[in-house]
Image (cartoon, rainbow, N blue to C red; front, side, top):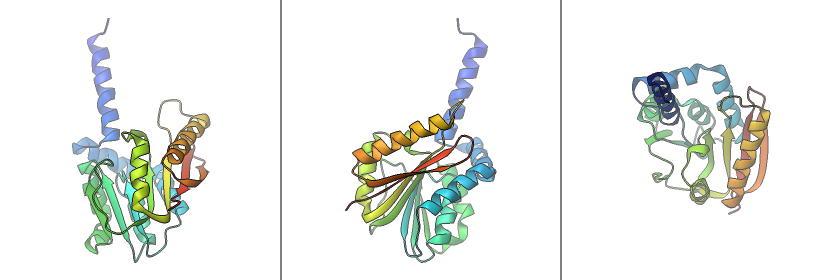
Length: 213
């Protein structure tokens, strides 16, 4: 029999999971603020950006940018290019816009409230795409990745990052997550796949791939 306490606990868990997926309101803003301050999260995002080898004139897209840590790092590298970001949380768009206010005013960073299945136009082809801990939430991820591949220039790069957050996650959990991402990228037509690992707890996997053209 389900007690009132058990029912309340389940509702709280569903709410917290929903906030992690789509932060909103004051709680969502607070989650983003804590995410930005957590050293491991900052290290993970900066590391992921470093693997993309972003050049000064690159046009780069991040999907699910959260509080804008990686956006700032991308903008620091694409100094004469453009950094685009989409996130389906209005709270995260506002927070990332504040964190990157100068680059937004200079029209080097463009942040949009949108979902991965309804992407805005980015004009010219992109040089690189980044998604940190978001691909697992995408509907029909293979189709989403095919659409992203069409947005990339020939030889453009993509990086999908996963740090499992499920209870009891271990190195094996990360290895399985990396293999799943590799399978998705291969089915979507990407090539030259490689996996890099960052030794956090649990480890972070970054799967990099290229657009064959």
